[in-house]
Length: 392
Image (cartoon, rainbow, N blue to C red; front, side, top):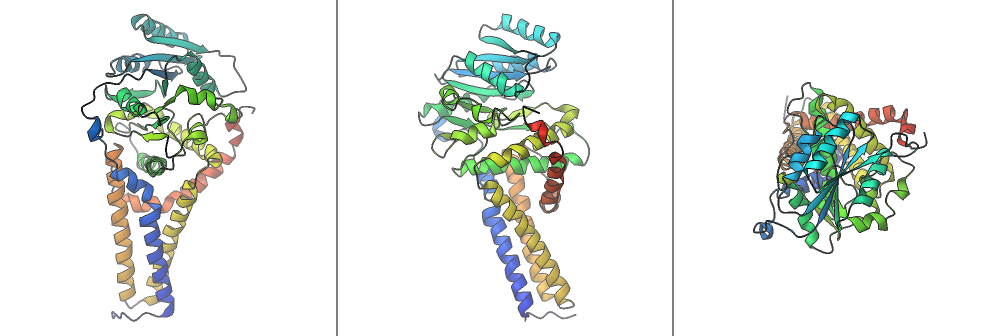
């Protein structure tokens, strides 16, 4: 076997395709993840001396049969510092025990209120109805939507989410929540973690690059007036979901949106052993509502996946075409190793920012199989797409 750095026309064309694909992936395709990886997790330097805000806030908490978590959640919520706030719990036809726990908490805390969604409400999104009732009951300028399935990890969460509204131009603060995977087992959790983080860095990265198009309804703040100016969820009343992404997509822009992903502002989701099923449900919801979003993010993602596959295909052809000459093989291998190393480093930095699992060797593999997995999931979701409509 010899090493010869004189290439034929086909090899040169394929090398050019590999190089262009690699540059697109690294510079454009991974730009959202790079923006998240570079984002500072701590409160900005100019806000470090501040400890409170006079912006009054209403926290709307959705709950349904969460008696295992509701008491601990409310206790954590009531220990929030630096904010004048009220809490409105919207109980979505929970069992009697859950209701009695909430009533006891309301007697304990004067700024805690409860409202109900009737159990016989049909042909509508129960979560949208719940949030609408909470919004009407809210009295304050800023509202935060969340859920009792979340775990608050810091007494500065509320302050971090609200502090951005000191700027009169800010109308939305995009927060972040993620599943606590610490006690989960099985190989599947690694891919679910990868897929969730890629999805999160995409919409957060676009928001950091002044193109917000989606939010996290479990950790989302906005001015109450915006809800009524947008007629609430009237534009998507025929859909079960979209109370976060479709609603935010209606009026978020580069001037009125703040991003808050500091460690103290992130919420953990208590899915427990139901995480695989609930992760799949959430992916189905976002896959369905994603078709209605006004954004170029999905086009960029598809191009990046295509570029990655194109690079893999051209590299394979180069190796097969030039053997036993190793020069093109070495050059192609160098390009792949460089890209894989960059992918791994970037992903791990983003995982640190978002407090997620830091994967290693599986990252290049998961990037490769992700479009195939998404295609399979879309076929599964297509068979039950009617469940996404309220009139099913």
